[in-house]
Structures are given as structure tokens and as C-alpha cells.
Image (cartoon, rainbow over all chains, first blue to last red; front, side):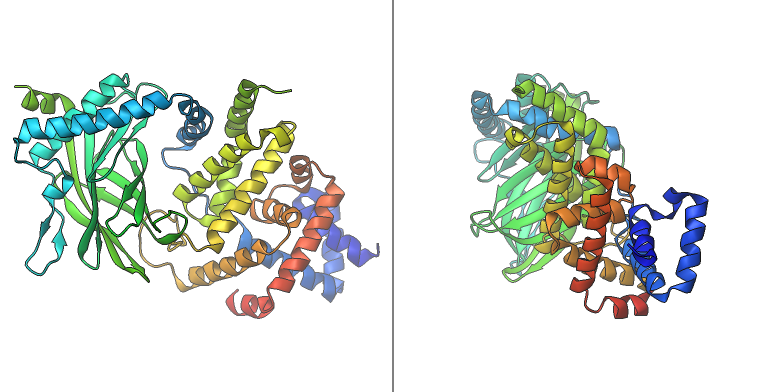
Length: 294
Length: 175
């Protein structure tokens, strides 16, 4: 290799700090007298600047929590596939709990559907309904029962019109008798297409898929903080009927107070304009238990 | 031959030792923490699925790096994410200044060009340029010689230049 090739290779291979002061001085001298190498070095530096990972992102909850989540969701998650009975039992339990508790606490004419909390305005614009105390107590009761069955490993519970789901940790979750409640409502062109209620422990994350009434589905990834006021990080994807394509995506971080209803953002897609609305509640499981079991 | 529990231990070890690297690689391309974490999860699950093809911890780490980078680029390519903020990527905030916009545009162009590189060149370019990992360490990670790292980096940059036809003009105007 001639000196130019050597300098360029060295520049790329070792970079200056690794070569020691003498090598750096030699390179500097060469670059000052060789426009070709100087241009190549400048280009390398510019490209590096453009690519350099200058924004050091950190995972939610810190590195240890991130590593633990990775282990739980990859290494430990595969164990769950060995227990299909548990998933089946969970589905049945969720359905039964949500249904029976709804009838029991709100009377035979009340709907167990989260849609009961959603109204339509005179203009036909669906408006998100607040979570009533009855909704909250009913969901908290269902969550508590399911959590008991799963030895306090339940992290979240989803109850929707046509779906129910839950997340189970690989070990018991300690919490201070507080649960968060979210009503997730999706509108398309101001018409309601999907709604679901999520009960989740503070500090936990949920990954869930909810059907929408136009055969599409919505995939939510929701992280919650364990402090107050609660912060929610919500990632939403609108999927095609077979779930193979993403039609739209929305990422938002919200700081919310109990009783609050708000818009979490919009997605403008070729299929229409979508808006995600959130109603938020927080409940003490012990107090809720006293209300439902006076 | 490794058993299932051996592989579980190996994966846990990888997460503990290299979780930050995997996250950082994905975040560098996606600028979004939630998406970066998802990519890391997918890489780990793929690692398990392909365990028969991976011989040891060193080759597993190199392989996982490759999966993380390729999966991140796939997400970029398909435009699945709204990488709307050049800042933390997490919190909606004020618009970044114009200079930051330029840097974001520039990075987008380089990301698209990176996607067109062959795997072997892309890995070296990403690890060396994006993560700033020393050549000798990259060589160790990928199980190749330092000379090969140097050669692939040189070739990678050459190929990037080919894909960035207006690179010099763009960079000249913006920096």
C-alpha cells in the first residue's frame, strides 16, 4: 500500500485516539499535504457525525428493568407455551368474572360492555365516557379475583366488547393496593370503532390487541409509571384485518389525573382519520372491595 | 450439544452482558425507546428459534447484533414509526431547531443508504461509526480479523457514498 492508502486505512481502522500521539501527528502531517486524503478523512468524519448515536436513549424504568423485561418476555415467556390450560382457564375466568360482576353490581339491565360509558353527541360525534365508580369497582373486582387465582402475578386485565386478555408476570407483583384503569376508545372519522377497558398495576406494561368494528385491529403497547401523577406511554398501531400490515401508528406520552378524559392523538391514514381517546381512573383495591362487599 | 436450559442461561447471559448494546443499536436507528425494546425482544426470540445454527456465545452476540440492526432497518424502511421528535423520541415537545431538522434529514438519508448495504458491510459500519466501538472490539464481536473490519468499513463507506449521490452537496449545505 502506498502512504495514502495506509493513512486512509489507518484512519478508518484505528481512528486517531487509538493510534497514540505519534501516529496521530504523522497522519495530521500527511492530511495537511494531501488534499485527497484530507477530503476522504473529512467525509468519514461527516458520515460518522450523521450516524453517531448522539442521543443516548434509555429504556423505560432503567437498564435493570429493561433487562428483566427482556428475560421475562423472551426466555420466560416460552414457558407459558407449555401451559395452554392456563391460558384457556384465564380466558374463561376473565369472561365469567367480567360478566357476573357486571350483572351483580349494576343490576340485570346494565351492560357489562365498556361501550356503556361512551355517548354519541347530537352531531353523531362519539364522545368518550368517563369511568364511573361502578365501572371502576367492577373492573377492580374482576382483576382482584383473577389476580388471586394467578397467585398475584396478574399485571393487567383487558375487558373489551369482543375480546378479553390478561398479562401474567412470572412472579408475584408487589403493589400498594392501587390499580390504574384506562378506557381506550378509537374513533374513525369521529365514529366509534373500538373501545376497551384496561386494568393495570402501576409500573407495569401491557401489550394487547383489540378488534375494531371495520375488521381492522388495534395493537396497543402501554407502559405506566408507578408514581403520581401517572405517566402513560402509549404506542398504537392500526392493523389490517389479517394483521399483516400497519396502516397507521401513534406514539404518545401523557401525564394523567384520575377522572380525566382526553385525546391521545390522531392518525391520518388513507383509510380515514383516527383519534385515540383515553379516560383514566385510579382505585384502591381494598376500598373497592369494601364497596362491592359491604 | 446444548440443552434447552443451557440456551436459556446463554440468552439470559446475553441480555445481562449485551442488552445495552442491542438497545443502543436499535435506538440509534429508530430513535424510539419502546420500538427499540420491541426489536430487542424479537431478536432474543429469533435467537432461541435459531439456536441450532448458533454455536457459542460469541457467535450468538454477533448474530443478535445483526438481527437487531436488520430488524430496526426493516422498521425504518416500512415507515412504521413516527420518528417525529429528534430529541428523546419519547416526549412530545417543542419542534427541534432548524439545525436539528437538518441533522435528522441527514441521518434519514444515511439510514436509507445503510439499508442497501450487504449485511457484512452494514454490521461493521453500524458498530464502528454509529456505536463508536473500536476496530479490535468489532473484530472480536463479529469473529473476524481486524484487517477484515478495516476492509469492510472502507468498502462500506465507499458503498454508502455510491448510494448518497448528493451526499456532498447535502452535507456541504447543512454542516
